[in-house]
Amino acid sequence: MAARLPILVDDNLRYLKSYQVFLDNSSEHQSVKAFINGPLAEILASIGKGKTALRVMGVGSGSGENDLEILRQLHLQHPGAKVDYEVVEPSGDMLQKYKDLVENTPDLDHVTFTWNKMKMSQFENDCKGRNLEKKMDFIHIIQALYYVEDSEATILFFKSLLEKNGKLLILLVSGEGSWAKLWKIYRPQFGKTDIRESTTMGDLRSLLDSRGIPYQKYELPSKMDITSCFTSGDEKGELLLDFLTQVQDFSKNASPDLRAGVLDLLRGPDCSQEVDGRIMFNNNIEALLISP
Ligand SMILES: C[S@@+](CC[C@H](N)C(=O)[O-])C[C@H]1O[C@@H](n2cnc3c(N)ncnc32)[C@H](O)[C@@H]1O
Image 1 (cartoon, rainbow, N blue to C red):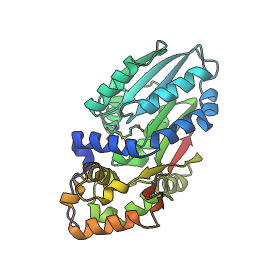
Image 2: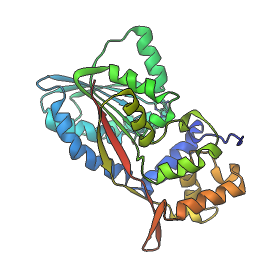
Image 3: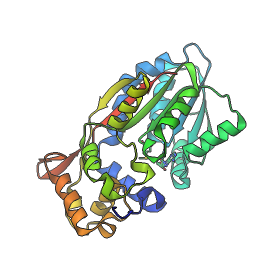
Image 4: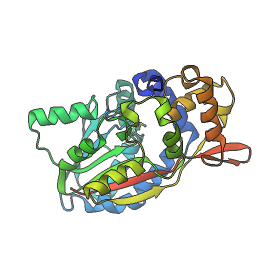
């Protein structure tokens, strides 16, 4: 059996740094923003119609950029409505960045934030323990469902929190993109951990199909410049490799064969294209919308 490699999310500081390098080198947030202000705008208009107060929840919100974009669009669609906003995020550093962002963003007087510094599984246990019956108009889990043990139970739980006209939005890497190819081939060698059990939207769609849970699906095109991964010892390249594999210090902890195999796949036509001398990885994302 493959040795268990240390998982990136367990090293908070390194996770933060790799995530930032990933954001700096990809069009991830731009793609999500285009989706929020495109197809999602209509959906946000349809939730909580006629209400004067909306209940919204961000799960695994990180430093909040996508959340505030959703809030901005929600305000455009429901100009007079107050918003009660729950944030569930375990990283104290991420939450601090999120709070700083809120402080520096005008026009948020209509929003009341409740900060839950905890994992989504803890939040679920807390709710069940307290018998919390607070129904939500909109819940999103953007690029964070990788970090749960049981994605099915998690989805069913958050779905159960929805109001009659509410929507649950889940964003994950595309089932057909390069992330899926990388993980399909190498996941077992990265070591079996919770994070890699049900990781792509392909896995998730199969799961929902088998349970007969309907959804609307959207494809969000996105690219990532991974050129620095091919310069051995390049700090940013190493951090990006950690993010791609979700392994801490991948180059040091992986065997030379595994590292060589991963770099080969990343550079090849299954994952990337060379554009103007840069290696561009297909970072396509998929969004699913689920009703109660
Ligand atoms: C890839 S980031 C995405 C952040 C944000 N949603 C975005 O798209 O910008 C994943 C986030 O999930 C958080 N996370 C990790 N494990 C989690 C868990 N068990 N429950 C909730 N959030 C978790 C991380 O701290 C991180 O902020």
